[in-house]
Image 1 (cartoon, rainbow, N blue to C red):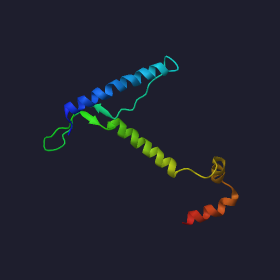
Image 2 (spheres, helix red, strand yellow):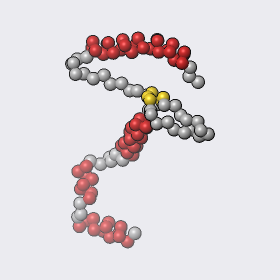
Image 3 (cartoon, rainbow, N blue to C red):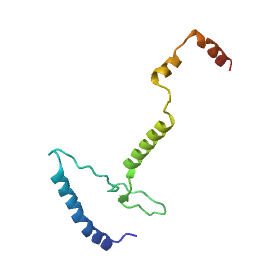
Image 4 (cartoon, helix red, strand yellow):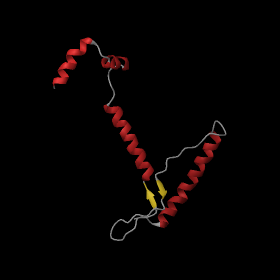
Length: 114
């Protein structure tokens, strides 16, 4: 369970450090148009979902959220694809295998029978 007084106490400790982080980022930027990118794993969502028995979920969410889950699934898909579908052949060799030649006629005939 979360308690406001404990959260406020933690905020009082953390807030000055965030301010120091931003000051350091501004002081150390190489160019005035540099960006500071942050990863956020807590957010506010206006959608409230029924968790069952009439209990509604909170607007405040911890975790990657819908966009984060989509991003994670996208990464998982690309990672699985590149992990499982990387050919050990060179592309030119692959293309050469696809070209028709009279020598391959016997192989084609055997495949047609199957």
